[in-house]
Length: 328
Image (cartoon, rainbow, N blue to C red; front, side, top):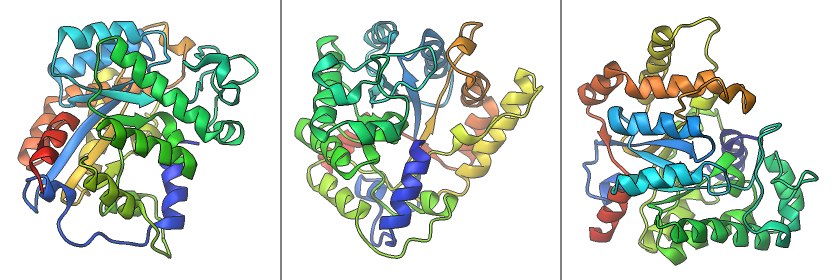
């Protein structure tokens, strides 16, 4: 199950509330009319191709934020890049699944967390299997081990988020995720604001108020920034067959421009997967074209001009946390 699908389930059950009062972006010091974006690249460290695509965008494109999958084999390469480029907005893509058929990784906690391990000795492929087999205590130890590895490698993450949305799949997992961020004073990806794009895009018709917004306020009161909304649909945009790179770039840029225009004022995280696939990447995944499309869109001068012409403000988790420290 994807992060988008998990959020669908959550919103159908818990979110009938439209945020009133100022947005979190406004509370962070932006104007009430500002549309503020964190353009964010997932899956750093998963492969060398993933790292190279992310690095290209950081140096020449629009997206300025990324997160690293600490159990994966190519983490040292991206960490070396981060050390050579201090100030890069890099967080942890907390990873509890290993979804590919033949390219696998295991938990950093190893055999001490048997509920996280599938019959091949890797993390489970699906979110559902993690929920079915792992305890919240095992999840907590693993995400702390991932943070510990980053710190030992000399990289302090600017934020935390969740690979495949696994930490949003279970209330006890979500509690461990949020508590880790509050304890360590590291921002967490959490859409606790008006969530307009999520609800409208997923066609959710929530019937009762429960509490993404309440948890958002809890995070805010703990001194952390909170998202007003989340744009997490691009992984479902399957490229038409037979496009060359120029056509792929134009098509993907158009999809981003169309959907970003729908965003309401506030702080919105836009999730993408920028990769520069080589001939090796198809041995990992059949998602190379859509990941390359994300990279090409972020490198597109037309997209960068669109952001300026429409008054979008591109920020980072690091800046959001700095602003939170100055806010009331």
